Length: 336
Image 1: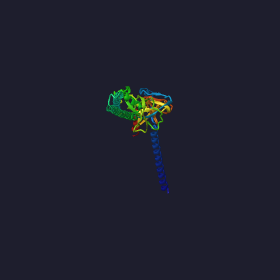
Image 2: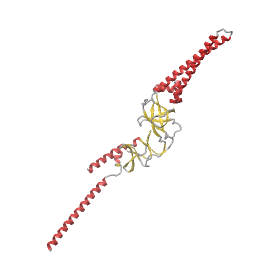
Image 3: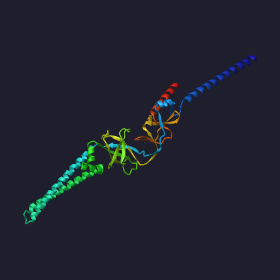
Image 4: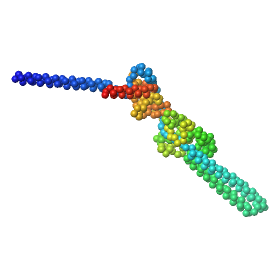
């Protein structure tokens, strides 16, 4: 009986010890998990000491909210000049033929009038001579009429393709046409999407071939033909031939006249990560949170978007992103 009681007591002590070991192990495991969780910063961003902020050249500014016509980004095609010169050649040829026919007609008309006067003056010329002069005159009249119709057809076709302003420039061989064929300016056709309600093309707009360097283009006229890649209307613009050559497809910022509320972020405030634009804002001393730039519109001076009203990093954003990535890599290495 005593041996049985002793064995039971020893067994109980062993179970208790085992239970204490399991509890302690679980407690140690929980502490380890807790410590690991605390080390992970769940927010996107980075915290820097004051000295590091100064050394990195971090500059923040509360961006002033306002209204801005962010416009619509569309395409502008730099048109080849050859079609214009061909049209100018066709017009010049038709015009010369019409003028020549008109001159011949005037000469034959005067000859007929002279012969007619002689015939009326006691038949100083025969009826046959009068009839011959009239036949020549009538023939020249028909030729002049045909040449005039051909000229009108050429001009009409040119107007239907290029519009009145360009057609007039071709007919007159004016300064506009000379600047284009001399390569001083480039002719653009700017497409206006059908969902943009414009009554007329803006007097000026900005275009770029790399979305970084923007230049001003001047309105010339409405285009009778639309861009084949965009459903909607189109306008002709001219731009200085400074790095822009015929055949290029450019980006164009088309003002719509509809103001949007937001803030303008300079290009230096925006960084790219995983194919998306981001920016940093200061939320506490030394703390900079990274936020995605959602629904932003790229404009000439930077990016326009509605953002939280907080100090925004306008210089040194790339340094913050590099430091944030460095700390994430270091943290990941420590976990391993």
